[in-house]
Image: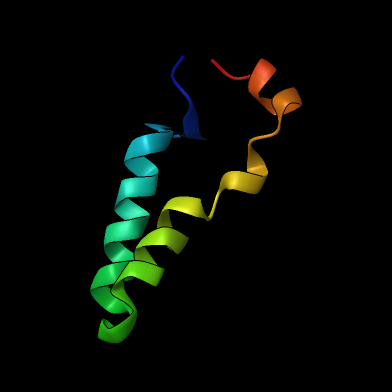
Length: 57
């Protein structure tokens, strides 16, 4: 199953999360790189409830 983070432009969720994590690491505090990476990958978890997933894809 493929999940999408955006509909316009259509972007796969994993690609979006990778981009956000990379951005966060690049521009965040160097001492907290792993924290920034985790936050980048986890920032959309609350948006993906079962009810919403049934309507995507």
